Image 1: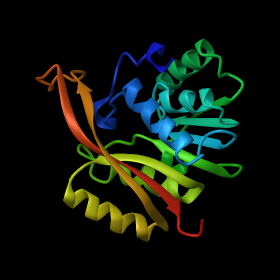
Image 2: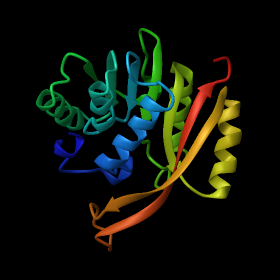
Image 3: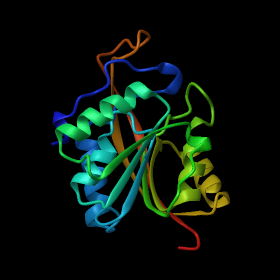
Image 4: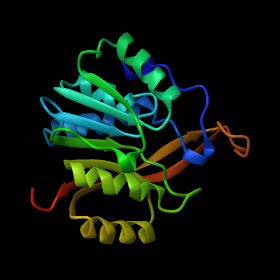
Length: 200
């Protein structure tokens, strides 16, 4: 079902927008749902939701309430259309705003996010990680793979009050969507972190 969604036609390099492929989004959500029971009947938040693939996928897997946040109104228009086409309107809410100033009114069980990797703007991913750990019991967050980055994130996550329970590494395909891209597709190593708040 996620393969049928409309993708955003334009992306902004300053925001490091890269669409999450349907098969990766489905694999992340199925793992969260089946291995950890972090989706069904839970309140889910997708920080930097883009076209809504994680938010809608969570709704399709039985989340009770899903919030998608993005800084771009054009992204949320695509999310709303996708939600309507897949019948998840009753479960999904779309919020326009910056992640740092996002305030939640009730408890969030799980955050799922594919934040900017922080290549163009150093530390961009940490804004998402900081917010996720502060609002949710469990966070699934994607970051560039590599020993140095993993050591840094392990220390940072602990400082933010999080505890890493699992790290999965996979190849993330980046299509040729910006002018400076030379290859039709470039594979990047990505680590998916499952993080619990330390008091949970």
